[in-house]
Image (tube, rainbow, N blue to C red; front, side, top):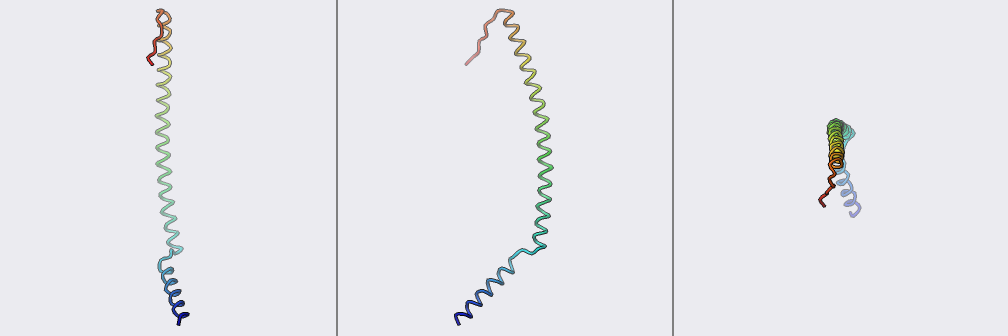
Length: 88
């Protein structure tokens, strides 16, 4: 009788596994959904990187303008004989 109970338990566990396991079609559908979401993320990331790249171009341009202005200010200060005073 103990052997019968064990077989019944195994049979119930097997039925549970079969009932809840994913099928090949389930996995194919999941793969399709994930691929679609990854593609959307790729497009979004590419768009964001392009935007950041453009913003960095602008920042670099501003930095060059600021450096040029500082050079001109330094030249004017030298010409006027002013000392550079930098606040700490």
